[in-house]
Amino acid sequence: MKLTRPRPAAARFSHLRVRLVPEQRAAVKIMAKERHLSMSQLLRLLIARELEEATFDAGSRRDESVIRDAAILIAIEQVLKLQEASIPGGITRSRQLLDAAAQAAMARLASAEEILARGDRQ
Image 1 (cartoon, rainbow, N blue to C red):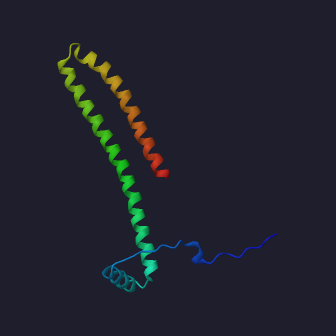
Image 2: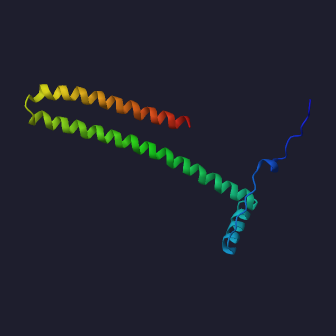
Image 3: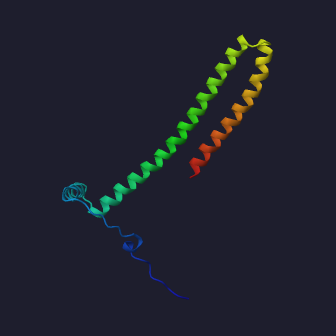
């Protein structure tokens, strides 16, 4: 049995070199000092925040898609109501169209819910 030593915390981090203009370096140094952090700790914190916001933005795009789908469904319903008044067969034909549209709408909503559920799991 081979025993291994636990790796020091520093070994878990990847090294990254960043070149900053003197003004940026000074600003980072001041910000780190104000927060009682090392410059490396501050940069890790800022990178983590930026990555978290990027993930949040992807989630909001999914929400926008669902809102757009709901707006489409409302528009379809309004068109069907207008057709009731203008097509031959009136309400009877409209009800037939409405049933088909309702089935399509339910399928679209189920698809949107599935997309949201998948996004929550990721």
